[in-house]
Length: 420
Image 1 (cartoon, rainbow, N blue to C red):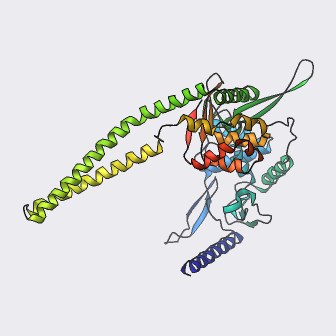
Image 2: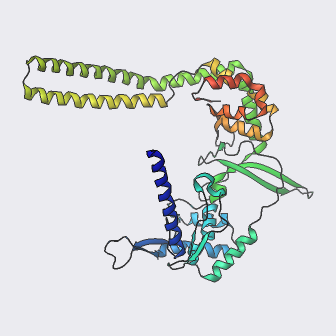
Image 3: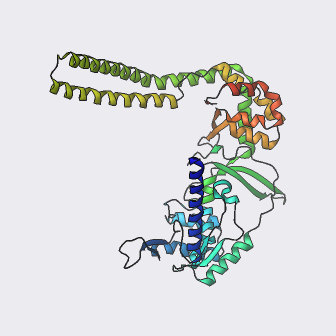
């Protein structure tokens, strides 16, 4: 009953807060964080400093005006982000500009002196998919950075360009988000280009390119493109090779176990030493307690010594806990070859039988990341196995080809990582 009453009170408070924020928006007051170009300062004459007024930060407002003017002049989102980053401008949070950050600024009516609220509904569950059809738009009490004519021109251009371009390639990219840029480490994304040959034939070329470069421009990174077909063939061939030959898989597992042992041996030695010291300190404390009960030790000496020993015990306990956690997070237990072989036994057959979407999902569950070397060739493929695979197999018909795989996963809930 107390829990039910508490939940009712919580829901009532939430609703009252929402009503209060809606009312603030309707009266032209802002809610939440201020966008780039503005800051909140105490209102003059308010001794409590609780009442705030929104004022323009001119050094940031210059960036906002530049974004609007560039877009109104025909520049694209990526081109604007690239120029801002080359000029060392930063967002409100101190990050580099991306295409999404630029678009958010162009879409924000706050810069035109308006207050927008309730843009999304049920955010905790639906996030950006829960876009409200009737957000609150009201005249704000703050100064506008963008005048009406420029605002309307930019909104017209945004609406004119807001269409989904027709795809000139209907295939898919299996490894998007898995391949990492060799320069900055960002996820590489799909990139399609059209080239015309000397005979006039149009050729589609498909690549994986750096996502940071695609979104933020050349000031952040470069394209570092790798051909789609070459990358996917290399990954699939290497996976097939490892999965089909036990000798190669065994060598990989042995190498991992050797690295784990080499890396964790000093930690285990230090932990053993700490445990020995802790045991000695606890025994010393007990001996002092026995002497005190027998009346064979001075009280003033006993108090000081016991405090020293207790402080040492606490310090040793803290160090012992730190080492145990570090060893646990490091997955120090040796990897069993039979266990790994059982986990990936039906992998090749599954990839062959599954649809494109199922194969892509499976690869994203198995593969942690794929690194590329400076020569733009596949370097390492990091595989990770955990209980998430069970949910995939239980929801797809292709799971029928890997019953033993699924069964093994139900018994094994730990994470195993290998690199090939």
